Image (cartoon, rainbow, N blue to C red; front, side, top):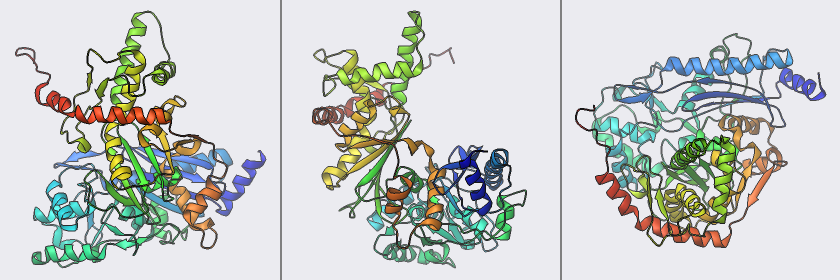
Length: 543
């Protein structure tokens, strides 16, 4: 056995490890790390939400089964690699999809099936609370779910004793503590940055609003207690140990850090918790999170306000559409190459075509496209139609075509980000980007740097994901120096030797993107017309 394996084996025996478990929308993942923050072993469990009685949900059976399966797979990997059984762990942390609604009575019975963030059933409540609080309350927030249930006069409401998130629920099962990390709490109810707790005046407003209903609880009585990163939030109980480890080898008494949401663990995994930094995650959809220095001056429906795991305010911009249309065009180019008798590897296809975008006119040559496979809340479109438009005078060539499609992938996001940077003068020192679009070197980074007018970095560890980020938060609980901030812990310990590739914005690209986004905004009426007038009609007799 090599030296580092011997050291790791001893670390596992001594409990000099940290475990992060994250419940994602399609996968539950457990990651065990050492004190160098490197992954020792991992395990996962695939799952899917189900639509039951009009609500997207996961059953409690699936939640517990998935927790145990992910832990068991991680434990078995340790046994195979190091020949030992895990009996203790230095610290544990639980994270999960934010928001949603889990309400329990005083016996611990779940009163209605878990309502996930995916449910769009709370629009009336979200709008009413936004107006009442003068604070943007998205439909997926826990308080919107609770208030919608009140508006619907659901029968379970008088029996509520505790309301929490999925991460808060798992933490409660394992420790008996009704605790929540401040980042996860910020998706339940607005947070007061000064108090590092729920916004007291809004809590009172809510209680006054529902007082006539006569429920036997006040809002604070049913919400979990808010904790910051680094604060102890309970220990693994004997019952909790038996729930987590079916083989019952794991011993109780292990400290747990506050449970967090997936936004917070994403910030940690990308070292984006310091003020004036942010991260952007690119896939089918795209979202950016910027850590703010001060509160926004007004309410913007395009901007969600959450917090870092230490309570700093974060402005989050989420666009529904990003890479789907680019992928569709890549499929067309693949078909063409194969029809010509050339088999092209996927990475080569993307690399060649993405790099053509670097040869284009700064603004994309007067071309315009919308990759809207679905509606887009930022631009006010309830449905989407992928669309490509040009004038006879547009400079229509492959380079401009590719640049236009890369620009438009970040079009809606750019409009939301401009609210932060132009309307609110939010300063950005660095953005950490992650997602498949960045596999081709340089190109995606240059496009995002142009859109955001800020340096954009790629980091080798960004792909580690939220479970690793949660393990880092668990490690911070045990391994931080006295009064060491999470920001310093990440900078000076976790990411001190990280491989970071940074690109600064090219001012020609920045001006080009600005010209493109003005064309994009003016052309939204074209996209709306396509939604209004272009449907795929099935001919009679062909159904």
